[in-house]
Length: 79
Image (cartoon, one colour):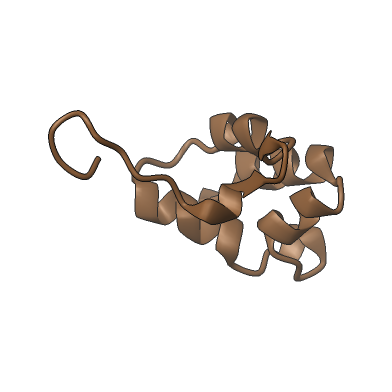
């Protein structure tokens, strides 16, 4: 939210046709709260994706792999 009823969305979650394929599914698979933490998932290297960023994996069509990585994101933080 950027005030009132307005929202801003990061440009990187879109391609020329609209929302990046697989992005909504990966976002739904994330169980962690917080927009910044979710953005960090997509923009950070991920060991389950051989060090690739989930964003780049989505751009290459690896939707199922990104969904699996999203579902397990944050598990290392549980005690």
